[in-house]
Image (cartoon, rainbow, N blue to C red; front, side, top):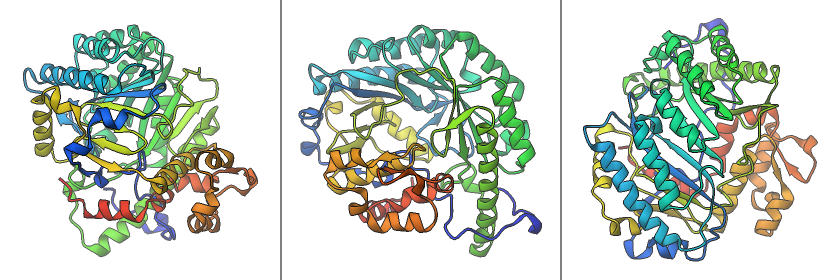
Length: 461
């Protein structure tokens, strides 16, 4: 956590805290609960779902190190034989999932995430691609495929496999090009090694390179933030993601918090202002250099090639997730395996996963049952957080009502705060620049009371 800013730099705390929660999926896994096995047969869950435009996700829960800010489902390293055992379990799960989907299932989008998928060696990545193609029937060379990597694991042999198997987007987690900032985020890496990895990625010829950067790291200034931005821009990435730093429970940085409530409130207010200042600086810097803002976090180079996956949204198409950190979405149920952040608990969940039989994979374990209200919230939330906004006609066509009918109080609050762009006209619901800046405050305000209660009752583990 950064130290408080000097008094001269500290502005008044905003009326609404801008950094509350990153909403990348709704509801969050902390709202999921154990499901009764007899009600969660995968065959039954997928029986009446549209299956002609599915998205495939493989989760690889291994990293060479765990960054201080990370609360993702991943473990450090893998004892001898564990990655092989994990891929064996993935194959058993893929067999069960394919049986549940039945004939006619078609994948139009794929992603490998984690963790760090490129923790797997080149031959293991070949096997992962084979599972997608030969067991599940996804033609990776014909659909958009996104893969996450780290500088240390972006080796030439791994990249060659991914390029040959059809990867259209390679996302590299850099976070900072300033070595001292990387150390402060508990991410041991050197800029020279990052630059070498980027050279290998460009040599491999992926159509889209994405670079992840983080702002709000302890000791980071506008000048050092610009250093990272310019270092990334030197590689002309097709995409850039700018993430605000969060310090969450049970993470490396989170375990070192020891302050009174008054100190916490003062520090958080100063940190909020600091992150907002860095966000605006980064946004303006990229906009001035030919990038378009897609969301609060995502920026795309104006001349970036289309890969075919730009229009995909898992709020309308099914998501089929494999691996013990993956989630899957049907219209009636969102489901996954157990979720944890603590390293000991994660290891236990992975060990249990690799011990499963094919039959054990024929049902969902943890989940959240969707209803009409939750579907409306999810659609509005995920659409509104995109810079282009949401066509009101699309919402009406799907739900038979208008957003202002269903969310009058919430939208009125957003308008009163200047978070909505009234110039967009009545047929497009779109955030203003200030609304985009406050995406991590706006999103949680659309959570239902039921989701809030489940998340509040969740005991971190």
